[in-house]
Image 1 (cartoon, rainbow, N blue to C red):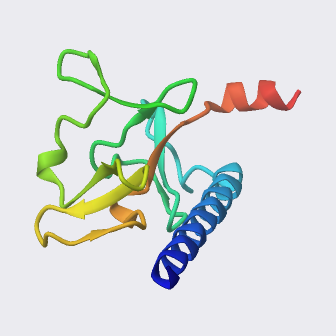
Image 2: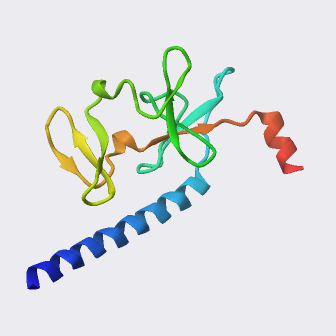
Length: 140
């Protein structure tokens, strides 16, 4: 019985820590800024790491697009929307789902390590870059 109570307490602690991390990530997302320097002329997106806060113009590697309801998707070579990363086999860390714990976990395909915390390699997000004209019109 004591073991079950301790396990339940550990699960509750994990859920609370997860919720705190999500709120911190949302706060950081509201403050993200495009990388310094001049954007490439064809830059539609820049890339922001929600763990490190780093921003850059170059795609760090197959970063997902985000739909209206924050659903993530990737594009195939033919432009078809996919609900999975077709190139995941090329990367060290991949995201998986734990049915038992009802949450994502992260698995390193090279070292065979797994963890609950999202690694920085998977924390990149695609952010639409605003042109100078559209940024000015939003200020008015």
